[in-house]
Image 1 (tube, rainbow, N blue to C red):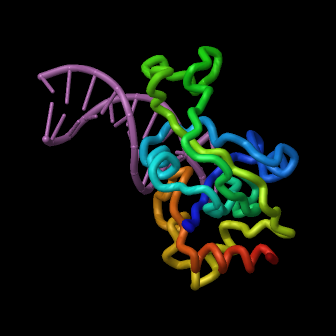
Image 2 (cartoon, chains in turn yellow, brown, blue; image 1 turned 180 degrees about the vertical axis):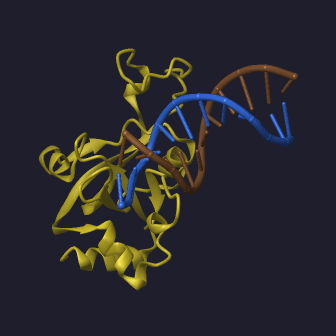
Image 3 (cartoon, protein in one colour; image 1 turned 90 degrees about the vertical axis):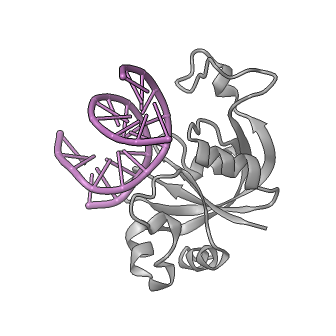
Length: 152
DNA sequence: GCCAACGTTGGC
DNA sequence: GCCAACGTTGGC
C-alpha cells in the first residue's frame, strides 16, 4: 500500500465536493509525471492526502483513497473541455487517471504553515522548493504525522 | 498581482 | 539534442 498527496483548488473541487460525491475521477491532469504516478504506481486502496492549493490558507483538508485505477480521463475527448486533447485516441487514451473515494475530512485544515512548522515533515515532498506536481508520492511516516495533525 | 520554479515548445 | 522563449503552478 502506498501513500500520495493530490492537489485540488477548492474553488474548483474541494474535500466537501468529494464528501458529497463519495467518489470522483481525478480528471484534468495534463502533466506526464503526475499522470505516470496515477497510471503506473497507484493501486486500489492507496491512501491520499487531499490538498487544497491556491486556497486561503493552502493545506491538507482530508483523506481519500484510490477506488479505481486505469480510468480514461473523459475530458480529453470533450471538445468543449479546456482539457481537450485532439491528439489522444479513443483506442489508446493518452490521459489515464484514477477514481478516488472520500475517506475523511480533517476537523481542522492542516495548513501549509503547520506542515512547515513540523520538523518531522522537513523532507516531505510538498514542502520542497518548487514542488508543483499535483500528484506526488508521500511517505507513510509523513502521511501518519499529517493525519494525526488533522485530528484523526 | 508578483514572481520563482519548472515544464513544454519549437527553431536550429 | 540544445536552449531560449513562453506558459503554468501556486505561494505569498
